[in-house]
Length: 447
Image (cartoon, rainbow, N blue to C red; front, side, top):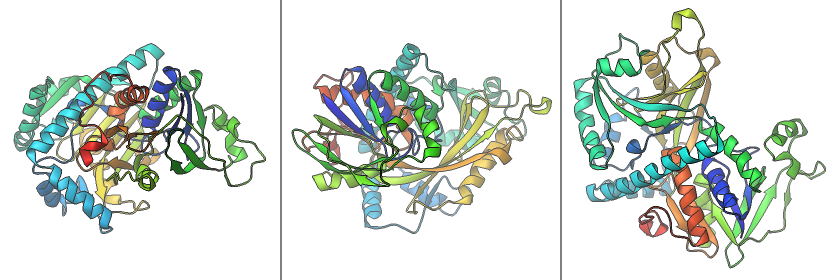
Protein backbone atom coordinates (compact mmCIF):
# COMPACT_ATOMS: atom_id res chain seq x y z
CA UNK A 1 0.00 0.00 0.00
CA UNK A 2 0.93 3.67 -0.42
CA UNK A 3 0.83 5.11 3.09
CA UNK A 4 1.38 8.64 4.40
CA UNK A 5 2.57 9.25 7.95
CA UNK A 6 2.02 12.74 9.40
CA UNK A 7 4.65 13.68 11.96
CA UNK A 8 8.26 12.62 12.48
CA UNK A 9 8.65 12.51 16.22
CA UNK A 10 9.48 9.18 17.82
CA UNK A 11 5.86 8.05 17.26
CA UNK A 12 5.84 8.93 13.56
CA UNK A 13 9.31 7.53 12.84
CA UNK A 14 8.67 4.21 14.59
CA UNK A 15 5.36 3.95 12.71
CA UNK A 16 7.06 4.68 9.39
CA UNK A 17 9.79 2.15 10.16
CA UNK A 18 7.32 -0.65 10.95
CA UNK A 19 5.22 0.10 7.85
CA UNK A 20 8.32 0.29 5.64
CA UNK A 21 9.65 -2.97 7.07
CA UNK A 22 6.32 -4.57 6.15
CA UNK A 23 6.94 -3.62 2.52
CA UNK A 24 4.61 -0.63 2.17
CA UNK A 25 5.50 2.49 0.17
CA UNK A 26 5.68 5.08 2.94
CA UNK A 27 6.05 8.87 2.84
CA UNK A 28 6.49 10.87 6.05
CA UNK A 29 5.42 14.53 6.19
CA UNK A 30 7.14 16.62 8.88
CA UNK A 31 6.71 20.36 9.35
CA UNK A 32 10.14 20.80 10.98
CA UNK A 33 13.52 20.42 9.32
CA UNK A 34 14.41 17.06 10.91
CA UNK A 35 13.00 14.23 12.98
CA UNK A 36 12.54 14.40 16.74
CA UNK A 37 12.38 18.19 16.75
CA UNK A 38 9.45 18.75 19.13
CA UNK A 39 8.00 16.40 21.79
CA UNK A 40 10.84 13.91 21.29
CA UNK A 41 13.65 16.46 21.49
CA UNK A 42 14.70 16.46 25.16
CA UNK A 43 12.39 14.26 27.20
CA UNK A 44 13.44 12.30 30.29
CA UNK A 45 14.40 9.23 28.27
CA UNK A 46 12.79 6.72 30.67
CA UNK A 47 11.46 3.38 29.46
CA UNK A 48 9.93 2.07 32.67
CA UNK A 49 6.68 0.14 32.02
CA UNK A 50 5.78 -0.14 35.69
CA UNK A 51 5.63 3.62 35.97
CA UNK A 52 3.62 4.20 32.80
CA UNK A 53 0.21 4.97 34.23
CA UNK A 54 -2.66 7.40 33.70
CA UNK A 55 -2.22 10.83 35.14
CA UNK A 56 -5.92 10.57 35.97
CA UNK A 57 -5.52 8.63 39.23
CA UNK A 58 -7.75 8.53 42.32
CA UNK A 59 -6.94 11.45 44.57
CA UNK A 60 -4.94 13.22 41.87
CA UNK A 61 -7.24 16.25 41.77
CA UNK A 62 -6.60 16.90 45.46
CA UNK A 63 -2.85 16.53 44.96
CA UNK A 64 -2.87 19.03 42.11
CA UNK A 65 -4.70 21.57 44.27
CA UNK A 66 -2.35 20.93 47.20
CA UNK A 67 0.67 21.56 44.96
CA UNK A 68 -0.74 24.76 43.50
CA UNK A 69 0.92 27.14 45.96
CA UNK A 70 4.21 25.33 46.49
CA UNK A 71 7.47 26.78 45.23
CA UNK A 72 8.51 23.46 43.68
CA UNK A 73 5.11 22.21 42.52
CA UNK A 74 5.29 19.30 40.05
CA UNK A 75 1.99 20.43 38.50
CA UNK A 76 1.05 24.01 37.64
CA UNK A 77 -2.22 25.35 36.24
CA UNK A 78 -2.02 28.67 34.42
CA UNK A 79 -4.60 31.33 33.74
CA UNK A 80 -5.28 30.54 30.06
CA UNK A 81 -7.94 27.87 30.56
CA UNK A 82 -10.26 28.11 27.57
CA UNK A 83 -13.40 26.07 27.02
CA UNK A 84 -11.48 23.14 25.52
CA UNK A 85 -9.10 23.01 28.48
CA UNK A 86 -11.97 23.16 31.00
CA UNK A 87 -13.79 20.36 29.15
CA UNK A 88 -10.57 18.33 29.21
CA UNK A 89 -10.16 18.87 32.96
CA UNK A 90 -13.75 17.73 33.49
CA UNK A 91 -13.13 14.50 31.56
CA UNK A 92 -9.82 14.05 33.38
CA UNK A 93 -11.56 14.37 36.77
CA UNK A 94 -14.17 11.82 35.68
CA UNK A 95 -11.40 9.42 34.61
CA UNK A 96 -9.91 9.58 38.13
CA UNK A 97 -12.64 7.20 39.36
CA UNK A 98 -10.97 4.02 40.70
CA UNK A 99 -12.60 1.59 38.26
CA UNK A 100 -11.76 3.76 35.24
CA UNK A 101 -8.21 4.28 36.45
CA UNK A 102 -7.62 0.55 37.02
CA UNK A 103 -8.81 -0.34 33.52
CA UNK A 104 -6.68 2.33 31.85
CA UNK A 105 -3.64 1.54 33.99
CA UNK A 106 -3.82 -2.12 32.91
CA UNK A 107 -4.06 -1.09 29.24
CA UNK A 108 -1.06 1.23 29.47
CA UNK A 109 0.96 -1.31 31.43
CA UNK A 110 0.30 -4.02 28.85
CA UNK A 111 1.26 -1.73 25.99
CA UNK A 112 4.37 -0.44 27.80
CA UNK A 113 5.75 -3.93 28.42
CA UNK A 114 5.15 -4.92 24.81
CA UNK A 115 6.77 -1.68 23.67
CA UNK A 116 9.88 -2.19 25.81
CA UNK A 117 10.28 -5.69 24.38
CA UNK A 118 9.86 -4.34 20.85
CA UNK A 119 12.42 -1.59 21.53
CA UNK A 120 14.95 -4.16 22.71
CA UNK A 121 14.29 -6.32 19.66
CA UNK A 122 14.82 -3.40 17.27
CA UNK A 123 17.90 -2.25 19.18
CA UNK A 124 19.57 -5.66 18.97
CA UNK A 125 18.61 -6.35 15.36
CA UNK A 126 19.77 -2.97 14.06
CA UNK A 127 22.70 -2.52 16.49
CA UNK A 128 21.47 0.91 17.57
CA UNK A 129 23.51 2.95 20.05
CA UNK A 130 21.46 5.73 21.65
CA UNK A 131 23.23 6.30 25.00
CA UNK A 132 21.28 3.55 26.71
CA UNK A 133 21.75 2.45 30.34
CA UNK A 134 19.84 -0.18 32.34
CA UNK A 135 18.07 0.23 35.66
CA UNK A 136 15.63 2.72 37.21
CA UNK A 137 15.72 3.83 40.86
CA UNK A 138 12.92 5.80 42.54
CA UNK A 139 14.24 7.83 45.49
CA UNK A 140 12.08 8.25 48.61
CA UNK A 141 13.42 10.95 50.90
CA UNK A 142 11.46 10.18 54.07
CA UNK A 143 9.33 7.50 55.72
CA UNK A 144 6.28 9.57 54.75
CA UNK A 145 7.34 9.46 51.10
CA UNK A 146 7.58 5.67 51.36
CA UNK A 147 4.14 5.42 52.95
CA UNK A 148 2.66 7.50 50.12
CA UNK A 149 4.41 5.30 47.54
CA UNK A 150 3.28 1.97 49.00
CA UNK A 151 -0.07 1.81 47.13
CA UNK A 152 1.82 2.28 43.87
CA UNK A 153 4.29 -0.44 44.80
CA UNK A 154 1.42 -2.82 45.56
CA UNK A 155 -0.17 -1.93 42.22
CA UNK A 156 3.06 -2.80 40.41
CA UNK A 157 3.10 -6.17 42.13
CA UNK A 158 -0.53 -6.79 41.14
CA UNK A 159 0.35 -6.02 37.51
CA UNK A 160 3.16 -8.58 37.51
CA UNK A 161 6.11 -6.21 37.91
CA UNK A 162 8.78 -7.06 40.45
CA UNK A 163 10.28 -3.85 41.85
CA UNK A 164 12.83 -4.22 44.61
CA UNK A 165 12.35 -2.17 47.80
CA UNK A 166 15.72 -0.95 49.08
CA UNK A 167 16.94 0.89 52.14
CA UNK A 168 19.20 3.92 51.81
CA UNK A 169 22.35 1.80 51.76
CA UNK A 170 20.91 -0.36 48.98
CA UNK A 171 20.12 2.75 46.93
CA UNK A 172 23.67 4.04 47.35
CA UNK A 173 25.09 0.68 46.28
CA UNK A 174 23.27 1.06 42.96
CA UNK A 175 24.01 4.79 42.61
CA UNK A 176 27.21 5.49 44.59
CA UNK A 177 27.26 9.13 43.47
CA UNK A 178 24.16 10.09 45.47
CA UNK A 179 24.99 13.03 47.72
CA UNK A 180 25.44 11.69 51.28
CA UNK A 181 24.05 14.85 52.90
CA UNK A 182 20.66 14.63 51.16
CA UNK A 183 18.09 12.76 53.24
CA UNK A 184 17.30 9.34 51.79
CA UNK A 185 14.99 6.83 53.49
CA UNK A 186 14.38 4.17 50.84
CA UNK A 187 14.11 3.46 47.15
CA UNK A 188 12.32 1.26 44.63
CA UNK A 189 14.54 -0.33 41.98
CA UNK A 190 13.54 -1.88 38.66
CA UNK A 191 16.52 -3.58 37.04
CA UNK A 192 14.68 -4.38 33.80
CA UNK A 193 13.85 -0.75 33.00
CA UNK A 194 16.16 1.49 31.01
CA UNK A 195 17.00 5.02 29.98
CA UNK A 196 18.06 6.19 26.53
CA UNK A 197 18.33 9.22 24.29
CA UNK A 198 14.96 9.32 22.55
CA UNK A 199 16.03 11.91 19.98
CA UNK A 200 19.17 9.95 19.06
CA UNK A 201 17.10 6.77 18.69
CA UNK A 202 14.66 8.63 16.44
CA UNK A 203 17.45 9.84 14.15
CA UNK A 204 19.02 6.38 13.96
CA UNK A 205 15.71 4.68 13.21
CA UNK A 206 14.92 7.30 10.59
CA UNK A 207 18.04 6.18 8.70
CA UNK A 208 17.00 2.53 8.99
CA UNK A 209 13.52 3.42 7.73
CA UNK A 210 15.07 5.21 4.75
CA UNK A 211 17.05 2.04 3.95
CA UNK A 212 13.70 0.22 3.88
CA UNK A 213 12.45 2.71 1.29
CA UNK A 214 10.63 5.22 3.49
CA UNK A 215 10.71 8.75 2.07
CA UNK A 216 10.89 11.70 4.46
CA UNK A 217 9.64 15.15 3.41
CA UNK A 218 10.75 17.84 5.85
CA UNK A 219 9.46 21.41 6.08
CA UNK A 220 6.14 19.98 4.89
CA UNK A 221 3.11 21.28 6.78
CA UNK A 222 -0.04 19.19 6.29
CA UNK A 223 -2.97 21.59 6.11
CA UNK A 224 -5.84 19.25 5.32
CA UNK A 225 -6.77 15.58 5.13
CA UNK A 226 -9.45 14.38 2.73
CA UNK A 227 -10.78 10.99 3.82
CA UNK A 228 -11.99 8.34 1.38
CA UNK A 229 -11.02 5.10 -0.35
CA UNK A 230 -7.88 6.93 -1.54
CA UNK A 231 -7.38 9.63 1.11
CA UNK A 232 -5.47 12.77 0.16
CA UNK A 233 -3.36 15.45 1.79
CA UNK A 234 -2.95 19.17 1.16
CA UNK A 235 0.62 20.14 2.04
CA UNK A 236 2.36 23.50 2.29
CA UNK A 237 6.04 23.05 1.50
CA UNK A 238 8.62 25.56 2.67
CA UNK A 239 12.09 25.58 1.11
CA UNK A 240 15.20 24.72 3.08
CA UNK A 241 17.61 27.54 3.83
CA UNK A 242 20.74 26.82 1.72
CA UNK A 243 22.82 27.14 4.87
CA UNK A 244 20.91 24.18 6.34
CA UNK A 245 21.04 21.91 3.30
CA UNK A 246 24.31 20.19 4.19
CA UNK A 247 23.09 19.20 7.63
CA UNK A 248 19.70 18.05 6.37
CA UNK A 249 21.26 16.03 3.55
CA UNK A 250 22.80 13.72 6.17
CA UNK A 251 19.25 13.11 7.39
CA UNK A 252 18.00 12.39 3.88
CA UNK A 253 15.65 15.36 3.68
CA UNK A 254 17.31 18.20 1.82
CA UNK A 255 17.44 16.45 -1.53
CA UNK A 256 13.63 16.36 -1.59
CA UNK A 257 13.46 20.12 -2.22
CA UNK A 258 14.45 22.01 -5.38
CA UNK A 259 16.69 25.02 -4.74
CA UNK A 260 14.49 27.20 -6.94
CA UNK A 261 11.30 26.41 -5.06
CA UNK A 262 9.32 29.57 -4.13
CA UNK A 263 9.08 30.53 -0.44
CA UNK A 264 5.72 28.82 -0.04
CA UNK A 265 3.51 26.72 -2.26
CA UNK A 266 0.42 24.56 -2.01
CA UNK A 267 1.15 21.22 -3.57
CA UNK A 268 -1.40 19.21 -5.53
CA UNK A 269 -3.03 16.78 -3.13
CA UNK A 270 -1.27 13.40 -3.33
CA UNK A 271 -3.42 10.28 -2.94
CA UNK A 272 -2.67 7.28 -0.70
CA UNK A 273 -4.21 4.00 0.35
CA UNK A 274 -3.97 5.00 4.01
CA UNK A 275 -2.91 7.96 6.14
CA UNK A 276 -1.59 7.54 9.70
CA UNK A 277 -1.81 10.62 11.90
CA UNK A 278 1.06 10.93 14.38
CA UNK A 279 1.03 14.72 14.71
CA UNK A 280 0.82 15.00 18.52
CA UNK A 281 -1.37 17.89 19.72
CA UNK A 282 -1.89 19.23 16.19
CA UNK A 283 -3.70 16.00 15.31
CA UNK A 284 -6.90 17.40 16.79
CA UNK A 285 -6.97 20.27 14.27
CA UNK A 286 -6.32 17.98 11.32
CA UNK A 287 -9.00 15.50 12.38
CA UNK A 288 -11.77 17.90 13.41
CA UNK A 289 -12.97 18.60 9.83
CA UNK A 290 -13.36 14.83 9.40
CA UNK A 291 -15.73 14.67 12.36
CA UNK A 292 -13.09 13.06 14.58
CA UNK A 293 -12.91 14.98 17.86
CA UNK A 294 -9.92 14.12 20.02
CA UNK A 295 -9.75 15.72 23.47
CA UNK A 296 -6.01 16.36 23.21
CA UNK A 297 -4.44 18.96 25.46
CA UNK A 298 -0.84 20.22 25.46
CA UNK A 299 0.67 19.59 28.90
CA UNK A 300 4.09 21.24 28.97
CA UNK A 301 7.17 19.67 30.49
CA UNK A 302 10.68 20.99 31.10
CA UNK A 303 14.20 19.58 31.04
CA UNK A 304 17.75 20.69 31.74
CA UNK A 305 20.58 18.80 30.01
CA UNK A 306 24.16 19.55 31.04
CA UNK A 307 27.57 18.03 30.24
CA UNK A 308 29.44 16.21 33.01
CA UNK A 309 32.51 17.69 34.63
CA UNK A 310 35.60 15.61 33.92
CA UNK A 311 37.83 16.36 36.88
CA UNK A 312 39.20 14.43 39.87
CA UNK A 313 36.95 16.21 42.36
CA UNK A 314 33.75 14.90 40.74
CA UNK A 315 35.07 11.54 39.53
CA UNK A 316 32.54 8.71 40.06
CA UNK A 317 29.94 11.09 41.52
CA UNK A 318 27.73 11.15 38.43
CA UNK A 319 24.52 9.09 38.02
CA UNK A 320 24.89 5.69 36.39
CA UNK A 321 21.44 5.27 34.82
CA UNK A 322 17.96 6.66 35.61
CA UNK A 323 16.46 7.95 38.83
CA UNK A 324 13.23 9.59 39.94
CA UNK A 325 12.82 11.91 42.90
CA UNK A 326 9.34 10.85 43.95
CA UNK A 327 8.61 13.95 46.03
CA UNK A 328 9.27 16.43 43.22
CA UNK A 329 8.42 14.09 40.31
CA UNK A 330 11.74 14.91 38.64
CA UNK A 331 13.64 12.30 36.62
CA UNK A 332 17.43 12.33 36.42
CA UNK A 333 18.89 10.50 33.41
CA UNK A 334 22.45 9.67 32.44
CA UNK A 335 22.82 10.12 28.68
CA UNK A 336 26.40 9.38 27.69
CA UNK A 337 28.54 12.29 28.85
CA UNK A 338 25.52 14.36 29.87
CA UNK A 339 22.93 14.37 32.62
CA UNK A 340 19.31 15.41 32.12
CA UNK A 341 16.78 16.46 34.75
CA UNK A 342 13.19 16.47 33.50
CA UNK A 343 9.81 17.11 35.04
CA UNK A 344 6.96 19.55 35.67
CA UNK A 345 3.51 19.58 34.10
CA UNK A 346 1.89 22.84 33.02
CA UNK A 347 -1.75 23.19 31.98
CA UNK A 348 -3.52 26.30 30.77
CA UNK A 349 -0.48 28.24 29.58
CA UNK A 350 0.49 29.59 26.18
CA UNK A 351 2.95 27.88 23.86
CA UNK A 352 5.40 30.77 24.37
CA UNK A 353 5.28 30.72 28.17
CA UNK A 354 8.41 29.65 30.07
CA UNK A 355 8.29 29.34 33.85
CA UNK A 356 11.63 29.92 35.54
CA UNK A 357 10.23 28.24 38.66
CA UNK A 358 10.09 24.93 36.78
CA UNK A 359 13.77 25.23 35.86
CA UNK A 360 14.62 26.13 39.48
CA UNK A 361 12.96 22.89 40.62
CA UNK A 362 14.99 20.85 38.14
CA UNK A 363 18.19 22.56 39.24
CA UNK A 364 17.35 22.02 42.92
CA UNK A 365 16.75 18.27 42.53
CA UNK A 366 19.90 17.84 40.45
CA UNK A 367 21.92 19.73 43.06
CA UNK A 368 20.35 17.78 45.93
CA UNK A 369 21.50 14.43 44.56
CA UNK A 370 24.51 15.22 42.36
CA UNK A 371 25.91 18.64 43.36
CA UNK A 372 28.60 20.08 41.13
CA UNK A 373 28.68 17.10 38.79
CA UNK A 374 27.38 18.99 35.74
CA UNK A 375 28.50 22.12 33.94
CA UNK A 376 25.29 24.05 34.39
CA UNK A 377 26.58 27.10 32.54
CA UNK A 378 26.63 24.97 29.38
CA UNK A 379 23.18 23.47 29.99
CA UNK A 380 20.45 23.17 27.38
CA UNK A 381 17.09 24.25 28.80
CA UNK A 382 14.04 22.95 26.98
CA UNK A 383 10.25 23.08 27.20
CA UNK A 384 7.96 20.87 25.15
CA UNK A 385 4.27 19.94 24.83
CA UNK A 386 3.05 16.47 25.73
CA UNK A 387 -0.10 15.47 23.79
CA UNK A 388 -2.34 14.29 26.64
CA UNK A 389 -5.71 12.59 26.53
CA UNK A 390 -7.76 12.99 29.71
CA UNK A 391 -7.89 9.31 30.67
CA UNK A 392 -4.28 8.28 29.97
CA UNK A 393 -3.85 5.70 27.19
CA UNK A 394 -3.14 6.72 23.58
CA UNK A 395 -5.57 6.18 20.73
CA UNK A 396 -4.41 3.56 18.21
CA UNK A 397 -6.10 2.26 15.08
CA UNK A 398 -9.00 3.34 12.87
CA UNK A 399 -10.27 6.91 13.14
CA UNK A 400 -13.75 6.26 11.79
CA UNK A 401 -12.93 8.38 8.71
CA UNK A 402 -12.23 6.25 5.64
CA UNK A 403 -8.54 5.59 5.08
CA UNK A 404 -7.36 7.56 8.14
CA UNK A 405 -5.61 5.87 11.08
CA UNK A 406 -4.45 7.15 14.47
CA UNK A 407 -1.34 6.82 16.60
CA UNK A 408 -1.71 9.78 18.98
CA UNK A 409 -2.15 10.88 22.58
CA UNK A 410 0.79 9.22 24.34
CA UNK A 411 1.24 12.08 26.78
CA UNK A 412 4.49 11.95 28.72
CA UNK A 413 5.03 8.28 27.84
CA UNK A 414 5.62 8.58 24.09
CA UNK A 415 9.16 7.19 24.22
CA UNK A 416 8.08 4.32 26.47
CA UNK A 417 5.10 3.42 24.24
CA UNK A 418 6.41 4.27 20.77
CA UNK A 419 7.74 0.97 19.47
CA UNK A 420 4.77 -1.06 20.67
CA UNK A 421 2.21 1.44 19.41
CA UNK A 422 3.88 1.53 15.99
CA UNK A 423 3.77 -2.25 15.66
CA UNK A 424 0.11 -2.43 16.67
CA UNK A 425 -0.91 0.32 14.24
CA UNK A 426 1.08 -1.22 11.37
CA UNK A 427 -0.71 -4.54 11.95
CA UNK A 428 -4.10 -2.83 12.19
CA UNK A 429 -3.56 -0.95 8.90
CA UNK A 430 -2.63 -4.24 7.21
CA UNK A 431 -5.69 -6.01 8.67
CA UNK A 432 -3.58 -8.44 10.69
CA UNK A 433 -4.21 -9.69 14.22
CA UNK A 434 -2.22 -7.60 16.69
CA UNK A 435 0.41 -9.29 18.92
CA UNK A 436 -1.31 -8.07 22.09
CA UNK A 437 -4.89 -7.17 22.91
CA UNK A 438 -5.71 -3.71 21.58
CA UNK A 439 -9.05 -3.47 23.39
CA UNK A 440 -9.48 -0.12 25.12
CA UNK A 441 -6.85 1.61 23.00
CA UNK A 442 -9.18 2.64 20.19
CA UNK A 443 -11.23 5.76 19.59
CA UNK A 444 -14.40 4.08 20.88
CA UNK A 445 -13.03 4.42 24.42
CA UNK A 446 -13.41 8.19 24.25
CA UNK A 447 -16.96 8.16 22.93
